[in-house]
Length: 378
Image (cartoon, rainbow, N blue to C red):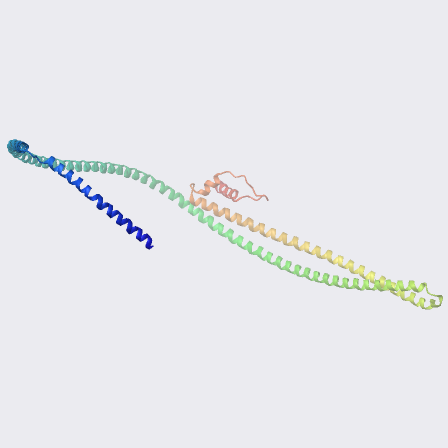
């Protein structure tokens, strides 16, 4: 570190020494060059000085002359500009007067234009009023024509209404008589319905009694079936005992002859068993025959009850249906007569219909047509 510092200081001192040695030569060269430049710029002789003064005087004179010429030109230009300004002022005065006149003329024209616009607005309003009046007149004329037609129609309709009123009064009287007749028919139908209801009630009670009897028979059959099942169980047990006894008798047949006496007693027992089995078989056959007869009678009773209920229900329902259809046809016929020819019922009846129900009954439209034909013939 110290060594590098020493080398740096030594180098700096050497450089300073060399600079001190070279500096005088550089200074002398600079002084020489400066002197030459100053001498070249400053005249050194009297002639050069006089020539320089003359040059300066000439330049000053030329500059002064140029200034005088420019001042003279500026003065002339100023005079011309003053003349132009005066002319412009005069022209502006004339233009101001002309502008005043034109403004006055424009004001007068604006007033006239406004008056013309007002006149045009008034004319337009008058034309609109005229058109509105014409439309009102046309509308009034149309209303008058319409009122005339309405008056004619009203007079014609009043005369026709009077005729229709007389016809309706006659129809009302006829309908009143028809309604009285229908009320009587309805009372008759109600009475018949009550009778049919009483008959159906009696049939229901009979049906309930038959059903009760059938239930009792079913219970009796069930008891007999239970008894038969018990008997069959007993019979099966007896058959099993008989089979065991037969096997035992077979085994005893192969025994010595000394046991023949005992075997004779067993044979007697087996005969008793055969008789009991035969009796049980006969009892079972009797029970089966009785059970078959009871089942047949039960089926017959059920079939009779079903047929009886179906026949009574069919008769009562068909009679009620016929009465209801007749009443409905009469009500529709009376409604069509009240509403007149323009009734939708009449339009519906005017359409031909050949449809019939599957059981051959007549439809409501056919019944109404039949009533209309009967009224027409009467």
